[in-house]
Image (cartoon, rainbow, N blue to C red):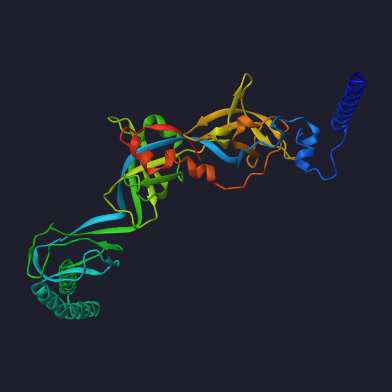
Length: 398
């Protein structure tokens, strides 16, 4: 009796186990339930139904490829000067009567900067002015009399010579008075002066300086080997030798016609239309020549395999595509390339090692000029200062 009961219980347990196994097989082969999420339903496949590792899109950072160019950069030291700059001096000896300018203030062309005492010269001028009309009238009268044979030709000639002599005396007196008024030869900013009313000034003494700072010229020299990469109008960046110094932008305005035989350098001038620059100051100067076109990418975007360098770029359908590239130049975090990549292409900037062909990639946010701004390097004041003393050249991009 006990044997029959045990057999019956065993049969029931076996039937239950078989039913559970059949249900499990049915669930594995059946389609997803109507309430299943899209991530659960398609986790094993990527765009176009292609299998994808990990079951979801990789976590990556995207960037936009930007147009750039490869050029050579020259970094040197230059000295600034005003567009026009002179030391204002006196032509004659004399005592200072008036100082009519304020140091550091603008003056206009023709303004009287300083006046010397000129009483003696004014007396001579008044005498010449008084005598000149008489001599002129006398010359004209004798010329008429000589024409009517009422006076000899000798008398007419003597009267004419006296008239011309007094005319010269008048001009000399006028010039002597003018020499005692020292005027500005051009518009500019006057410098400091030690002249005060009552001081005695000798001819040639410096009264003040005058600088036309409507534009600043920076003079610098480059090695003769770099002469062929310079051209008029080429952009130039200058800054005081400090990492936090303001950067000034100008252009090459003049290039010397010959190389210095001793230093084997070529003298160059750059013009900056910025009156805040300081004449006489030393600036770190950097200029980059125009070069061949290239594409700028973040340095982490470059991947390598046996075939060479490549990047992952986002195709029109949002899927990852392999794009072979050739590296032209590299900086700290930027790389210039050419190949199957164009400005505006969206590339994987970070996390490229997680990407496989066909993986879904997010779009990049366009940031115009972002790669150039991050590059720094050749055009920065610190970079210019580091190689300026030796006139070093390096590769750079625009």
